[in-house]
Image (tube, rainbow over all chains, first blue to last red; front, side):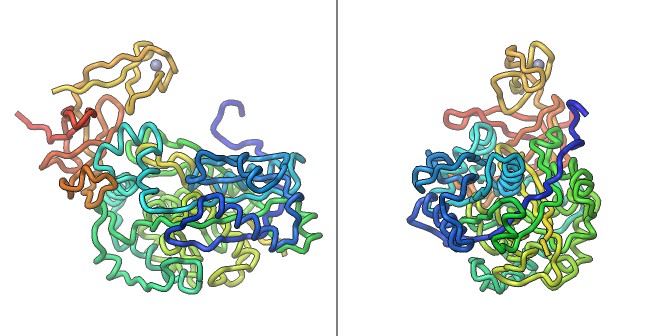
Amino acid sequence: MIGGSGQGGARDYRGIAVACPVTVPYVKQAKQPAHWFIGSALRMLLERTGLDKAAVDGLAVSSFSLGPDTTVALTEHFDMSPRWIEWLPTGGASGVMALRRAARAVQDGDASIVACIAGDTASPGDFGDLVRNFSRFSGTAAYPYGGAGPNGIFALITDHYMRRFGATRADFGRIAVSQRVNARDNPNALLGGKALSLDAYLAAPPIAEPLHLYDCVMPCAGAEAFLVMDEARARAMGLPHARIRGAIERHNGFFDDPVAERGGWAIDCDALYAQAGVGPEDVSCLQSYDDYPVIVALQLEGLGFCAQGEAPAFLRARDFTVEGNFPHNTCGGQLSSGQAGAAGGFLPVVEALRQVTYQPLGQQVPGARIALASGYGMVTYDRCLASGAVLVEGAA
Amino acid sequence: MTIRLQTCAGCGARQYPERDLCRVCLADELRLVDDHGRGRLIAETKLHRSLDPAFASELPLRIGTVALEAGVRLIAFLAPGAAPGDTVVLRAARRGEQTIFIAEKEQRE
Ligand SMILES: [Zn+2]
């Protein structure tokens, strides 16, 4: 199909292994720049695998606070001469996008071992600067209306969703509360030690109504990373790894919707499961992009777990904790771990990889085999533009 | 009271936020054209926090998403009484060096 919007003809990801999930511990604020977090993630990848730095011949990086540098500058910082690099300034979608690009590079022989890394620093004032200068449209048409940043935009999306589909604050509270339970044993979750009840969620101070404190992520510093290589190599190295069963991405999907009430996943959901040869019922755990609870609802709907508008009922009928019947954001997600800038966009992929390779930071989903990781990024005006998802399966 | 919207002389498309070319046909034929500014308020939020100290004294304040009859959407400040579902009319005003929009509930004669 030429010029169509489908994914007909997309090759599979056979022969590719995703391995070595690493996390540079999150901190609320950091003196070190983003380069330190990304380089520390690279060091952890090498320590965990015994690989020589020179063997890493591909480097894909995502960051918001690396400026003015990009991936190529990091090769100089780290004395590397890779034959393939990628730069992914796409935030919440960058984990899925890095995985897809790295997998193709290895399939095509342009790289043998790709390090995919997202990392950001955080210091007072950084977040305001990032929001003010995020995009031309947000600078001219969003920021002048109260300067609330993403909280204001996602408040509008949440308000519309609640009116249109009858969702309540308590429905969204189930997401935040279950993730706090999941974070309990994760030492990297900055809020993991603080229990959250539904009553406390509902009683929280308003930020941008209908959003209240526990609907919003806490900005922090940190990094997330993984390796992509040939499956034969991963086996030879004895690395626990996952295969890519299917992957999709979409940009500026449904751009005519006056308010975001669907994400691009809904366009490509069928193609994702067709490529994977599995259905939503085969997914052991969902790692969604949880910048705000309403976006989790859009992912439940867009990724085929329920129909549009039915996420509230789905939430009421399921237990989203690790030991429940719908394990979701099993490390606590960003809502409980903190949002380490672009690393928040890697977190779903890294946590999916941890679960299907049995290397969790916190709790393990019993019997996990197939995980779905999803991403959503770049609120350049009144919604995020980039969406993506990947199904990974642990290699027995 | 009218607002002005970027309009393509080639294909007639209207657009917001302003771009450098027509978003539909990519023609370099954009003009600012008067629009009645009527639309429907489809979402609202009351902001209690701002990243911009200039808004500190005005909090809480309400903003909303307006779907204009002209076929574009925009974010506007909400005048008292404008609620989601209402037909609203946009008024342009100056705030510092910026032109901003305020949505007011349409008065039925
Ligand atoms: Zn045109």
